[in-house]
Image (cartoon, rainbow, N blue to C red; front, side, top):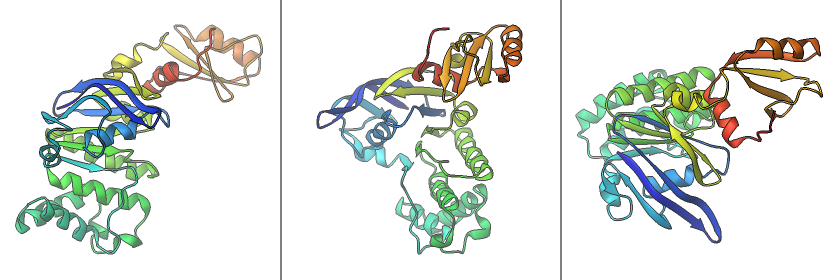
Length: 290
């Protein structure tokens, strides 16, 4: 349903993307992870036919993003990172008008609008002007529009950035609902927990390249050791596997001995199982030898 083959994009002398290759089947949630500047938004803009690639090919819903852009646009919907719904409309008016523009009948547009607003828990603000709503609520209005459209592929560029915990869970539920309906969802996110919770497939990017790709569980298995020991106030004689800020991270099979030594030395210690966040830090963070 989505495929990239040796995809590259250059702005002047700067390569924002280089040799990006991955593919995913229909009805899956794909998360693009990576630090700022990794090329995530550039990739999305190419896939939604907003940017032309410099080299390589990409396909969405079986169509070439360069040669068949119009066909792709009829089958996709997108919520861009900086997108905002029209302020003087109400949530109901915005979603309803969006569906009319996509060719739905008035009756079907009304039915779909009601369902999407309920799914995103927007029914209580359906009649308020969007410009009076919070930033997080505006993001949910945009998501309601793409949810109602019933397209083959949905692109969400950092859909939960700036949302509170409750709003984030509402968005997660909507993404899961689209997946159950057979929609392919590609989202970019800085929230690794979000990718691990929602995704069937994760593409990890850094500096415009794909570092690794696979199911979240398979990527987590690549983290060395079975447990992670996090320590604050690390003793000088206990060099960690990785340092993030003032936090030392140790990947171990048996956390007991090192945790006890760290506690005795005055460090604050947390022991937990491996997660996708650990794999991201391990692959794109500053890893040092133990």
